[in-house]
Image (cartoon, rainbow, N blue to C red; front, side):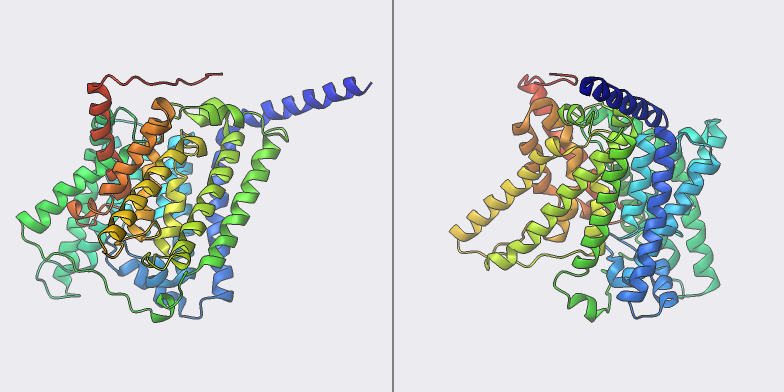
Length: 481
C-alpha cells in the first residue's frame, strides 16, 4: 500500500515537472518581468527607508551625466534612483521582447541580465536607445527577424558611455548647453548607434570563432575591440578632449565603509530564496535535474534547452547565494588583516556585477565550474601579498578592490575551461584574467561596459593556443556519469 502511494506521488510529480518544463519560455518571460518589478518595488522601499534626497534631481543627474566605466550610480544618484533605473530599463527590455514576439531563451535572458546589471554603473534609458535602434535598422536592411536579434540589441547597449559622452560632456570645444552642442552630440550619438547595429552582429560572430566559445561573454570581446577603435578614432585621431574622471560629491555615501551592504544583502536573500522556491515548485517540488546540471562542462551546453527553466531558476538561486557569500567574505578581509588595503562594499558597481556574474546561469555557468576561476583570482592575490610582504612593499590591492570584483564577475565566463579541461586549467585561466583585469579599461578609455568580458576574451585568446600547441586534450564531455 505504501509503495503504491509513493508511486502515485512520483507519477504526479513527474506530470507536474513535464507540464511546467514545456512552458519554459513563458516562465522565463514572467520571471524577467517580475525581476523588473522587483527593482521598482525595492526602489520604493529605499525611498521611504534610506534616501532622504530629491528623487527628480538625483534621477536627472543619473540620466544626464557622462557614464564612463566605472560610474557608481549609488554615489551619483542614490539607492532609490539606481534601483528605479534598473527597473525602468528592465521594463523597457521586457517591452522590446514582448512587441518583437521573441520566444525568449538563455541568450535573451543573458541580454536582459546584462542590461539591468549595467544600470548600476553606467547604463540608463537614454544611452541604451541609439544602439538598439541601430540593430532594428540592421534587421530591416538585411531583412532579418528582429525577434532573432533581440539579444544582440541588448548586448549592444554596452557602448552606452559613448552616447552619454557625446550628448552631455561637450567634448568638441562647443559652448556648453548651446543648440549647436546639442545637435552635434545627438547626431554623433545616433550615427554611432546605427553603426553599432551593423557592426556588432558581424563582430560577435567573428570573435566567437576566435575564442571558440570558451568565453561565455562573447559580446565582451567583440564590443571591447570595437570600443578600442572608437576610442582611438575620436579621442586620439580626431583629438577630442579626453574625458576626465567624474567627480561625485556625496560625502555621506563615501563615509559608509560598506555602502548599502545590509540593504542589498536583504534584497538578494529575498530574491534568491524566492527564486529557489519558485524553481523547486515548478520542478515538480524537487531538485531533479540539478545534479546533472552540476556535472555539465558548461561548454556549448544550453541549460535552458537541456534542463528547462525550473532547473535554471534553481541554478540561478544557488549560484547567486555562492556569489553573495564570496563577496561578504572578501569585504571582511581588510578588517581581519591590517596589511591589506581597504576595498569597497556594496557599491553600485558591486551590485551590478552580481547580476553580470549570473548572466549565463541558464547557458553554462554553475558553481562547480566557476569555483576554479575564483581560485585563480585568490591565487594571484596570495602571490601579490607574499611578494609585497617579502620586499617590504605595501600590498597594492585586495580581492575587494572594485576592479577585481568586476573582473572576476566576468571572468566566470571562462568556466568552460574548467568544465572541459579540469579545475587546474580553470585556475590558470582565472589567474591570467586577474593579471590583466585592471589594465584593459585603458585600451577603450572606459567606454565599454563589458570590460570584464573583453578581459575574459583576451585571456581565452592566450590560453587556447597554449593548450593547442602542447596538445592538451579536453578531459570531460557532457552527459558523463
